[in-house]
Length: 285
Image (cartoon, rainbow, N blue to C red; front, side, top):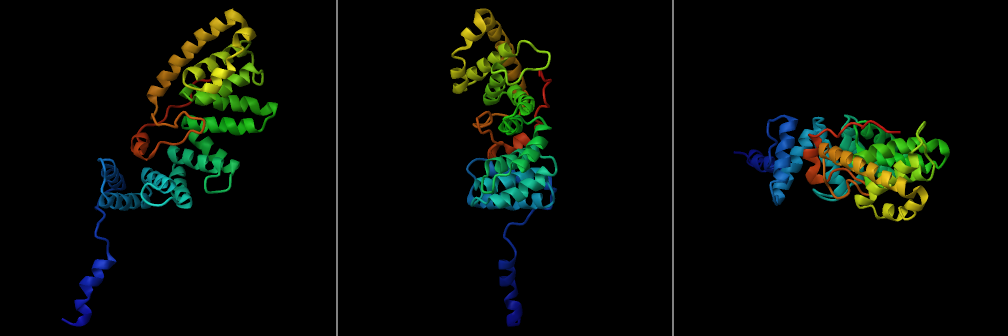
């Protein structure tokens, strides 16, 4: 054997990875990657194998794998944080109507995480995610509308806050309630908006929003005992409806209903990809 051919096995060893991607569908590779990552304390080798499987599935256009890769790069789960790579993979999945990727992109642009803040780009992705019923995106859209701070923007803000409020976000409930209580938004042909506003504040406070609790301080003097009792009854009805809506959704993670809601964390992505978020509830506005 010549020296040239004797070196060939050594060259091949360093040219091709030890881990071979299975001859399987993108979905199967994605599922295998998830099982490696969440089987409990994955080894470094398992993590590397999972990453290779995810890249193979994502490279063939499988949106859930693209979203997981985006999350991995955003959070540094499989290595160092890389927001630009995260955006690249999120965008691929978002363009296939993956609501988790759309929410993640909107949040990055809205907050200016590793990029310049771009409200127009954020609105674009939030609107697409909210169309699927995503409550977090609806809450951000309410905040964007309210940033306009003119009378014409309040009905739009209230519409988005209602979607998020019905899904259980106590901060959206507070904002919706305050718009009504302060008279900044009065539903057309609706005379009990202040009472309903207080009802939403009661629900928000009950679900752990401390600032909503503080806003309730002058409630009784504003609407009287009769109005107060009616607001409490309405709040109970709203709360029951919210718990029913929550039960239909992909949940629960720590910042799902926070003041800065985020997409499902890495270990919830697979479950949430298989559960369609509830569609927008019938609005009372």
